[in-house]
Length: 471
Picture 1 (cartoon, rainbow, N blue to C red):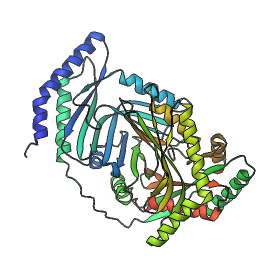
Picture 2 (cartoon, helix red, strand yellow):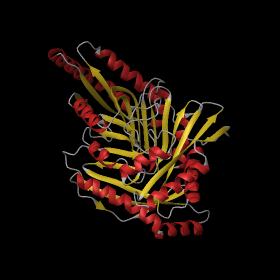
Picture 3 (tube, rainbow, N blue to C red):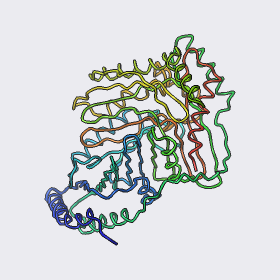
Picture 4 (cartoon, helix red, strand yellow):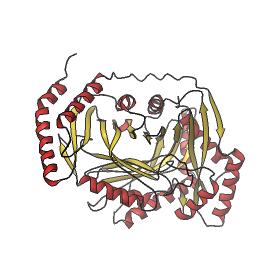
């Protein structure tokens, strides 16, 4: 086997790494402590989804995140540090956990490359407490992965986070890293052929159509009596297959079918995964520049260019859809202002996906260094795009109307690095996968003028997009 130049370099450099680890160990011995060493290495291009598929063990938590439009994908496997909490303080506890870990991390390698250095992966549930006792994910999970592999514009970076203490075997660490690199090197790029196996499903709606429409009618009465101006009602669909769902193939299908969405997957290390293709970014921060999406108001795509343009035109000019959209813009700008940020509203546009189109207004702001990304996440979640307005009233009503646990549905998932850069999305158009069973989620925003039939049809349209990808 020919050794790639990257690999050759690694063997030369591995003397530096050995010395570096020894010096960290020495200081651990002296100060009776342990430290996390974050090793970043450039490697030959590999598909992070293939790495996730091949390297994940069933009992390890993991995270996958891909945005084809940005030419980036990242897989995080296993945890060296992890926090799982429930309750109202979850965002603050997550922020404290990240800050205390960062005090204890030393870096090796070039951390100026995209996705080099330590990244923390976070997923939260919609409510700060799950009411369903056996829901498989806590309301907050934050972890620093043992292995992280990321691609940005064809550039590939491997990060290995390890705990070093006085007793650790430094040579073994180097050996492990070499073995892992060999293994990654041997992974053939699986060309993404979309082999759709005709999967035999049994589908069972969690709420029947009459029930959902009744909820819409009841919500409209509350809106007319002006306790609420909007509520998002979700529906769920249970699917049972003859075989276990193939997570890798399903994610591969999602990225083929929805190239302009965020493809994500997270595992709890107990056999359950939450996956989806979300069109909605909650926040992304890069070099202190924040951008967030106001995404609300929808119409189906047309079967012909003329029908498509007519649907888009109707969406742009519909008073109901624009009102729903404006509620989200107002909420986001108000919330950012409360944190002392100065939001700028960019020009509105259409976000056109394979089967649906949305009104979309990006909003930007500069983030001062003393405002942690999770402060912004906790301030924005849940937006009226996934809950309603007024938010607290809407959330209480959601609990009343929906017979199932939202869990991670419509909640923030993403990553934060040591510099305060981050990317969080909203986990909509998603499914909870458990062996041969899956529960799919989708929702619709109800405002004055909503039609129960149309809202039900919109939810079915969103569910179909996900169902099509599962194998």
